[in-house]
Image (tube, rainbow, N blue to C red; front, side, top):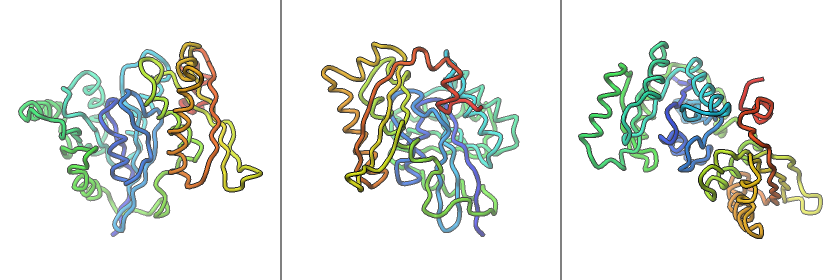
Length: 298
């Protein structure tokens, strides 16, 4: 009997949702960094084996936000709860339950959908008693279908969790071909690779203000095996533009070099990457730009 279904991964920022999805799929589908709110869009990752196909939804971290982008990201994550067969509620074993967690639990309790509590980052736990107390506080807040302790980064206990996910699903069709691991277009995946490098190389307020758009992609007329990519890095202030460009253009060259390598791995073809920086003041609070950049439903 072949099983299939949709599974959302929800939780606060930086609990390891994207790391888990990449580990399960065996390749990099969604970008990761140590910056909060790295994932801004709900990203589908497709796991297929001989027995099942699981369509994972990697969602933005749920958090209290001071701007419209953050509110849109949280609503995007919460909307997935209503259209899946299983909810993976991921937490960090290092953190205690708080008001955001209780709000997530309240939303989950209103549904009939089964919920797995996935306690991540156990490889970093030194105080086992503290871990057990943290888990107990979550179990007292909700009656979960299952509770799992894993390390997404190290792959500890991720395989057994995957089997339990499959056991929870019912018989169903294969929605995607065997070799398809995401249904997002190449332009989106490329823009995310570039944004990831900005996150890696900048600090403080810059990462949260960055958006990347792909302005043009075409095969080079002279070198047919080269793909020309022209992209714009969007920020909110002139000072942020100066930081990203760097002295004598040093930083934007670093961003381009690192992004080029990742995009080459993604596409398997040589590329020419042309990056520019543009300022759109306070774009995270302007609905027009949020819709254009795909963060709000039209």
